[in-house]
Amino acid sequence: MQTSLILLVLGMIVIGAIAQRVAGLGFAMVVSPFLILLLGPHEGVYLVNICGVGSSLLIMPRVFKDIDWRMFGWLASFSVIGSVAGSLAATRIPAAPLSVVVGSVVLFALLLSLVLVRTSFTARGNAPKATAGLLSGLTNAIAGVGGPAVSAYAVLARWPQRSFAATLQPFFVFTGLVTLAVKTAVAPGQLPELPVWAWLGIVACIWGGVLIGERVQRKVHDDHARFFVLCVAFIGSVTALVNGLAGL
Image (cartoon, rainbow, N blue to C red; front, side, top):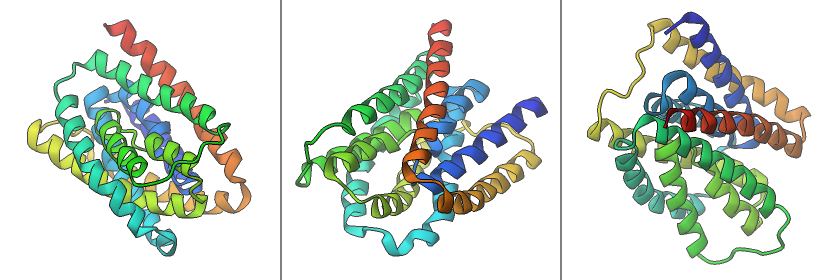
């Protein structure tokens, strides 16, 4: 891979890590569409899964006291079903259709989030939690994007932002590891072939993005941060969708 493309990947990872720290999610929504354009859908999503686990691991100690472990248990237990099913499906979908799927999933999630913000309906009970966990695991495995389903649930359940953002970190670590384990077992060889300096750069960019996000979080309102994430993700998802359709 050309050095310029690797640097572009690293730049997107920094932005994604900042978004993850500020808003609690957004890493995959920002990074996934662009990485599948640069690396291809299979390797791109695989790298998103790896980076997503890394960024959440770095953030988790910083928000540990706000994690709702009971909620995590509900989401995580049902996400396993979606993660396994999605991982098996992703290994069998050709590149162009998978690009369309990734772009469509993110785009649909963005539009859904705009609609749900305006509704007065409140989700109650355990069924919505289970559904959110299952769908999150499924979309994370297929498109590298696990946040939209739980975000939709958070909006409908009126889940407080601080607890929501904190609880997502161990949840993303769990779903990411399950997805990576299944994909590696079923279809090994999806790890992108990058030089050593690029992998070191990825680690540094995730770490740096989280640290920058720490400072940005103190100065930027949650609504503004989420708006930025939505804008970048929208551009990336449309680009991935068009690219996939062109390759069909």
